[in-house]
Length: 477
Image 1: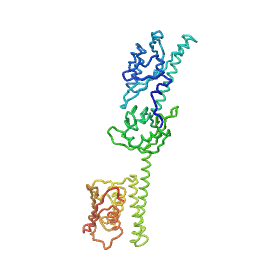
Image 2 (image 1 turned 45 degrees about the vertical axis):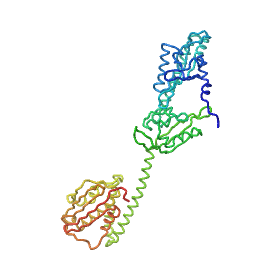
Image 3 (image 1 turned 180 degrees about the vertical axis):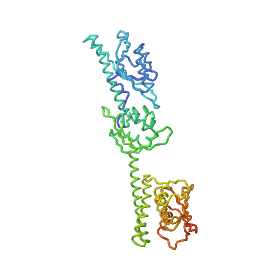
Image 4 (image 1 turned 60 degrees about the horizontal axis):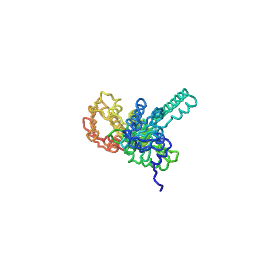
């Protein structure tokens, strides 16, 4: 096993000047390059207030304080393309103050709560460039050089802002995670929308999104850092808390974990990019369920047609009678199918089914008593055939064969069962049949067999009364 990395030694060997301040702008650390630029030993800076170590007043100090404050209080990286700031010369170099021009970047370093704990300053002394230009071309060219440096610095800063805007407004979600704890360095607007607009910048993954850690995503990130190989996920299910104190919501994501490789070959972090494909996954699932349901319904319908054909043929007096009865029953089945198609097979209303079957006999001859009831598709198909058989029997032998009427009443129990009564009045006297025909068998099979209900026939002298109950549950086979 290799020796642990000494990051303090690496920090001290970085050729660019870096120093670290606490929230009160007191020195915490500085590398050798910084100490060489400011010509101070560390013993003179350790724990010292910045503006005590390098006093200044006026515009220069105001610029520097504003930049440090932006980094500390807003947690945002702030750049100073150019700033004039005089520093005190050491005594062995004659003392006094020397005006210098600097370019500085201030980066907030957050603690575990996300608040800025330290401010890292990366600074460059560009005074030498100005002096060389002054010596070669005079003060006017020096001013031009200063203007040129400023313009270039402003151009770089403008390009940086544009890239950041593109990153933030990208349609796919993106985030940059740094270090072994996967601290959020950046997260764009789409990522914020995905996670419910939680503030995650500066927080490690375990503190920012604890629910995804429990689902194994931290282990995936660890593997990408260790192997330096990208991970591609397709339609990966993840549960996210998208509202404060709210429940976890299932989302499906296509995403890539791309390792961020440094010049020395190590992986310093992971770039996350992806899209939320939840709507597409749910649409595909709905389509699959619809196809399964369609296959089931087609099989049930074919079985019903087969039964109708066999029973009608068995009771028919001849080919013409068979054709008439079979066509009539198929038409009833077709009408119910039309009603279900209009609702995209979400079901149909009880009054709609009754009106389709009884409409040809005249609405004034049918009295309905009951609130409309939504019938699931399978229930609607079965009851459509039941009402067709009852209406056909009433038209041939019952109340609808004369000037009689139908009185239909129904209700739904607290357990979700339909209780229905079919009563014929004003028609010819009725008597129990001498044999059970296909209509009676179809009605009984529909109610008791397919709908798992109960049915009773009362052949009263004043007219037929049929009472049945059937559950309205959607899971009826």
